Image 1: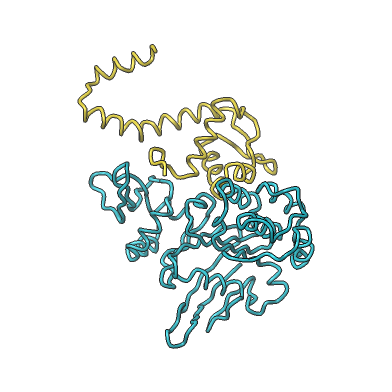
Image 2: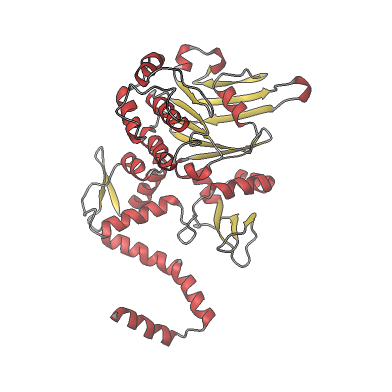
Length: 120
Length: 280
C-alpha cells in the first residue's frame, strides 16, 4: 500500500485527471473519456470512476452535456489550482510545518530556503 | 435482483447448521468481493447461490425465481467459474460451439476480445487438454465473461494466473461490467482485486460479519499510519511504523486496504458491527 498518498481511490483518480488537464493532455472544452473507458483503462471499478466524475463536476472542473458525456470546463485550470492550494494547506503543509517545528527551523530560515529553491 | 432469503443449510444433521437464517441481497451493477478464511463457508455459499446445493430452509432467488428450480431462464443467466475444474478433450472452437448455445447472450466477438486481452487469441484449434492450468483458467474466464450472463460468480479467479494475468483479469471485469450485471468474486488474493470491487462481504464461521460498499467503508474507517492520540481498532506493524484502522474523521477519506479491513473485522467484529450499523 502506498501510504504517502493514501487518499481514497476516487480522489487519486481525480488527481490524475487534474494532472492531465494541467499538462494540456486534456484541453478546456475537450471530451473526458467515458466512465467505462477510463475504468477499463486503469482497471478500476466503474462506480469508483463515476464517483470521481461526480466529484470533479461538483468542483466545477468538468461538466456534462446531456447525452454526450463529460467535458473539461473552460476555467478548469484555475479550479484545479485552487483545489490543490486548499488541499496543500490542509494536508501536506500541516505535516511539513510539524516537521519544521520538530527540528527547529525558524520562519526566517524557511523563507531563505524557499527563496533558494525558487532560484534553482 | 439476487437474494438469499433466510438460508439454513447443513451437510450433517448431527453437526447442526452450517448456515442458519442467513440473508443477503446482491444488486445489479455491482462487483462483490466475498472474503473469508479457509473453511469459513465461502464455497458452500457459492454452491447454494448457484443451485448446486439445496438449502434446508430458505431460498436463493434470481428475479424472485428460486435458483434451485433450475429453470432454463435462470441457469442460462448464471455462470459459475469454480476454483478447480477440468476442460474436456476438445479444441477451443468445439468447446465454444457446444457450450455457447446454452447462453442466449453469448457473444463470439466478446470471446475473441477477452482471449486477446489474455494473449490467448488467434488459435481456436488449440486443444484444451494440452494447455497449462493457467491457460485453461484464461479460456474458461474468457468464455464465462463472453456468456454475458447477468450473474457471474467466480471462486478464486486469479489463482493460477501468471503475473500479467492478474491485471488482464481486472481488465476483463472492468471492460465487461454493465449496470444490469452482478459479479461476485470469492478470493484470498485481495490485492489482485481490491480496486475493482464495489462491495465487500466478509464471512466467518458461516456468519456475515461485514457487508458494506467500498464507499461506506471509506466514510466510516480510515487506514493510515498511527498518530498520537489514536484509538485504533486494529494495529499492524510495518516497515513504515504502525499502520492502523481507526474510525474515520469527517472528511477523512483514505484508500481501503482490504487485508486490514478483513483483519479488523475478524479481530474486532462487535466494534465493526456497531460502527457500520450506526447511521451516518
